[in-house]
Length: 328
Image (cartoon, rainbow, N blue to C red; front, top):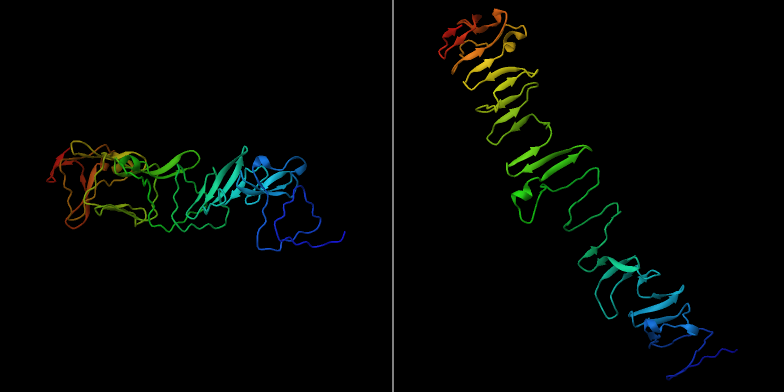
């Protein structure tokens, strides 16, 4: 068959099927109209569907083509059963400036990620960013009951970390805020107790420095090895007993304002020295000082110094506030 070119300068209405075995060239600035019909009007029977057919589906508002035994929307990225897809608008003529990502679930397309000019919304149960480095230039708001960070080292340039920043701040919202560590068996915590205006620490505390300073200037320090020094106008004990390293009572202060020194402090360890008063110094007694026990008798002694600064021993007894020995 000899090929010939035919030029049609007007509308030609041809009924029935037309088969063109060669190439078809549309040399015009006009248009070509494809078939338009509903989903129910898709080709059937002797007319298809056949691979390569293209039409406009007026039910879906989308161009579609037939491929691999199914109709595929040409203006969306979509999978075979059309429940997983990416769309850029709901219908032709709309300009929503949106991207929607759907992931199939039991045959129903569920929107998982929504993107527009102002936000990205993910409605999945788990969102994972596998990037080696993620930068968020704006604020980060986490709305949930738990924020979990899995890292070896957490670094922040913020100078203040605020806990329990509730919309309406109360004693109840503040109490219990703090830091908690679990070693696999027990919780170890530093928690705020608003009713007592104090931090509650569940375990021992070790200070790397040498000095603890209180609000009125009082200090506790161990600047000298083996020595703890308390700097304060007064030292008040909540109890009335001072014990030695063996948990034995050594100094007891009773309700009668008496100071009782146990015999073990004076002589129980085989030492003669009990109380030493340096030259020019005095010991003022508000009531009495009782030193109990002590054997042999030489342990019941007080050491004083005479006017020349020489040490001398005096028999132990009970003395009044003027220093007069009352006995025994």
